[in-house]
Length: 290
Picture 1: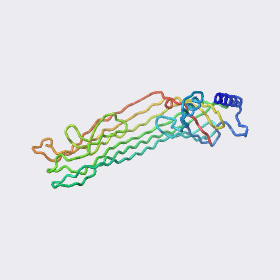
Picture 2 (picture 1 turned 180 degrees about the horizontal axis):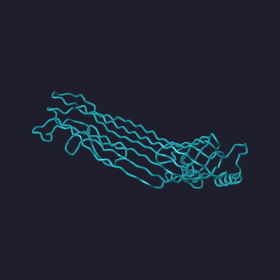
Picture 3 (picture 1 turned 90 degrees about the horizontal axis):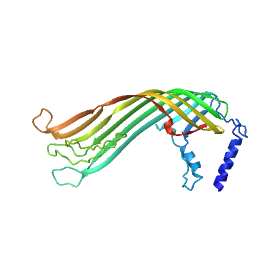
Picture 4 (picture 1 turned 45 degrees about the horizontal axis):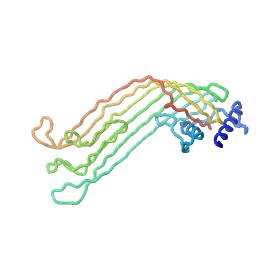
């Protein structure tokens, strides 16, 4: 009951002051020339407030990205009703896993050798645009356009402690499950033909596009707003060929005896053109101006 009374009291105070464009301390409610803005997903905060009316365990809200590209979004106001906006995602991931297997030796030994699996992902997404705002009350609309550019790479590298030799044609090696970034396939480092994968390089992905958007914000507190954004985006995506390098002791194509063979296999890429609506990942966002 206390929670309900507190929320109703807060709502009443907010409604009473909704028509004012300055706080009691004289602070401006709306963004001004020279202001910066940053946005986060409003869902954790709205869920927290909603849970005050239930018996659900209420975890503290967290700051999350306002989009599904994990991009940081900022604005810079040239005037009170015109802003430049930009978003960026820079994701560089490098991981090395190690495992140990018995060392091959023609004499008894208790030593081991090291196998390694290195994953490297790079994802870069950038957007730059302009935004025009309309309205002089606590409810402001906005619209504009932005250009979008993206680049992604992915590479898996495997090194083995036991080499393939005439004396050891099927060495003891770690069989890794290749952990792709997005590819749902379940592939290991041992092929159906018995070869060992030493490198799996996914095709580079490049994207370029443009986006028009429109939305609205409600300024609940001085320079603190709750808003949404709808968009129409047009983009071209290109993914190059993937390359798989593997090695084994076998008879090469056109050969007549077994030997150490390295094979290079290409997987085709693709290109996609897309024109579609979007709605900032389906979530409202909170914006803070300073």
